[in-house]
Image (cartoon, rainbow over all chains, first blue to last red; front, top):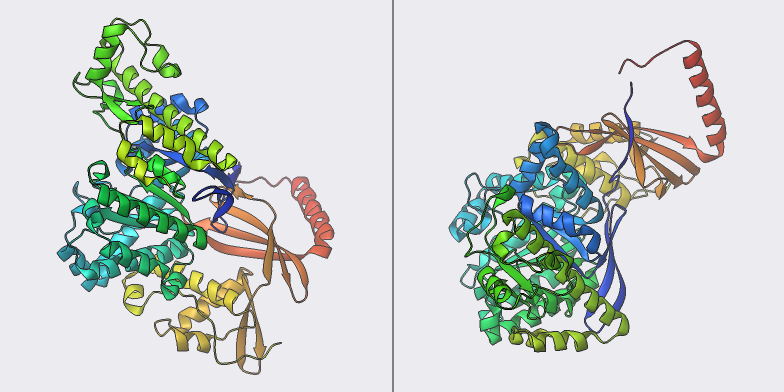
Length: 413
Length: 172
């Protein structure tokens, strides 16, 4: 019997960005990925364990603005392997597939063990290692083809270049090499898999010590000849490793300048622009023209329902824009019996509970995850409302003013 | 047909020889096919193999000929001989992908396009197979003039009737 099915295909892979509205620097876009339509600004959820998946899936009917999934490769491998293990685990696969149908889906090429054989990541490669790779085309191409192939097999919507980590004291050739990796990944992804690719700016926080290297990066991106070489690359990801912007106002000012310039670049070249590995600074970045931000999930996670240590864990405070440690939440809960959050379905179930420790551990983590996503959903809703009313900075300014993250106010336009 | 001049347009994102030579055979095949497709699209007035190999020195003439001939079989391109010179053209401009969702049977998928060129509009049915990595590559093609589509469909229906009458069953 012939098996027939209609499947969604990329006969010619499509990743189009169309700007719909603008308010000062912020914007709303529609991203079309082979017919899958995603509106931005949006929030991205990280998928690295079953707890993340359960939390995301559980909250999904409440989430209209979580539109990007950024996944760790090891967990995706587990999902793909679980399909053949029988019905019990294939639920994982089904949930994953369900989320992918309605979200942009990317694989983080900087995850440990993804490209390199041991648990190390491309961040661990020294400038000397990159220099060796650059001198040997076969080694460099192996890195690029290996990363691209793995992302393609995990069905990423766009293949992100395995860019070197650039630090303040990185040698100049590393910037040239970075562009070469971006360009080569773009060509390879397009010719081999018919997929679009994305620029990854993999920067260390110390780069924001001054503007020198940041300006060099912008000069490369805005160079007319180089633009032609990467014309088919449709997205930009900015990742800042070890960020401490809340403690350095000079670095924050340079971050604001840099992100604004990248947003202009993305707008003029028709690209999507995402920041990841960011805290609530990502929310402020949306007012600068970023299309979405992805926040690392804090706290100690245990996979598949094991108990966690009482000392670990945190709940996101949507008013204060910070994560509250489990102990503080537990203490305030015991002191006055209040729920953790008045308007969150996932928190109200704990109303009246004598101690949070009475909650099942896995349930606590899943609800905490869902609570964070709902908070972000609500925050992005506010931003979108302000774009439509052309008053983008007002509500944002109030929120940041009320929060304990006051230094991020300086990021707002 | 338009006269050819010596200069052809090339894509901006070509690999250099060093990078190309590091690719394995599957990757090379996919790369050559993709580059040739782009070159055809950039040069609608036609190209010759000599023009291509003059510009891209690591492209081997017999291999390029092989790929271009495959592309004429799959209807992605067509060729015309002027004296002893064989000129290749892109097979019209794809103006519409009929369905955003393609039709899959086992490992084969079929995409439907409307193509327009100098002599009319056609329905182009493109067949693709998955390679070892799961990437799709064009493996066949069929073009039917749009004005003859009704007759063609009626004929297929008659073929189906004959198949049913003779009791053929799929063994797949």
